[in-house]
Image 1 (cartoon, one colour):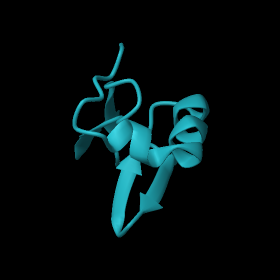
Image 2: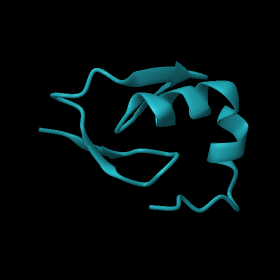
Image 3: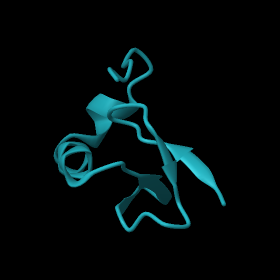
Image 4: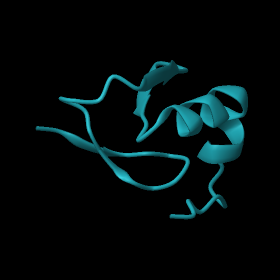
Length: 56
């Protein structure tokens, strides 16, 4: 089991069971739900900015 952090909300995501992922600039990001995936897809730079803090 591999755990990754959802870049939008900060939730832990089990990559072995989740089907919600998105590849951006050669990196795969994992998401807890479709809403987080869609937000990230629309504005990836917002969520990858060094000053962004996920709000759980």
